[in-house]
Length: 144
Ligand code: RB5
Image (cartoon, rainbow, N blue to C red; front, side, top):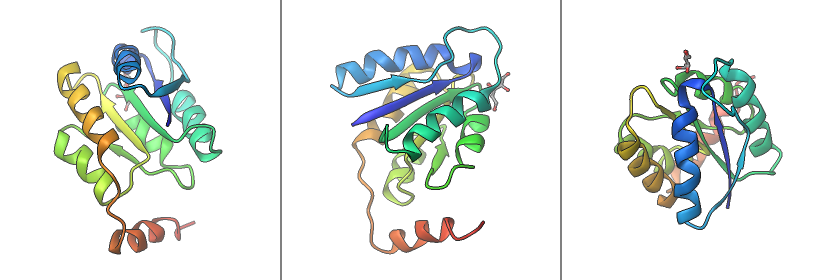
């Protein structure tokens, strides 16, 4: 599984830490920036990484910003992207089980690394439940 990583300055440190975690889990990743804690605009990085998932270059993404909100909002503009901004492990788990989230967005200013790591591990290992949820996520795409 190829994971797209993206962050703005507010999520840069978590993105860097996430690389080691993914290495430890034996997962490959592609870094769409940013490359430092210097101020940038989060949509630039979210769009680039979301596009890679949309095009099948990457399978899923873990995005970071200050809150996780801006990165998820930009990513969700892409057809087929289901980005979930989560602050607790149960939300991350449910975003996989019921929503088949293909992007997890975390806010570095809200979630410390220990908790973020727990959420990422859980999110990566939780499968989509399918069934009735398949129909529901299909309906997300019906709105133009
Ligand atoms: C940057 O200051 C901050 O607005 C950004 O990281 C993010 O939290 C936006 O949603």
